[in-house]
Length: 205
Image (cartoon, rainbow, N blue to C red; front, side, top):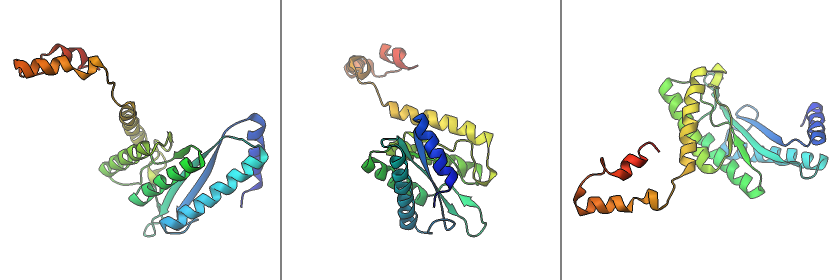
């Protein structure tokens, strides 16, 4: 079901021509089945249903598939935001989004409450994995599981995002960057690149 106030908000978005994130907040074992296939089936059905309503209100209204997948930790009652299973579900959302030609957005940058080293691992692998999937918007930075907000996590995430952005930029391939002259110099007897003009020119770039 969709509450009346959500429908009223949808009409307001349509009046102003605003794009809408269709928020699918599923909690495995809470408000969704405790299997990967089950949560994906329910989330996809909810997304398609909400999108149908939005397109009925205003045909052509831009939407995102906004997936916030979580799992309920039955031993503590806490919420897990990051796991291999949830990452696989984000991959499925990216596939569904591409099939529907709708951009995905995820909350993979949220970590589960855990030790610092595991938090760093969760944040990094989640961010990079979804970056490689082509997810253009990733939310949840600064959120740390059941602690709700963590400035430390936000600082870490800022560095991780810079790392991911650098990967996306790839490398510039040109006559200057290929360094063929430098390679030839070493091949002809120079023996090292440390003092090569090519190294001095590019080491800070």
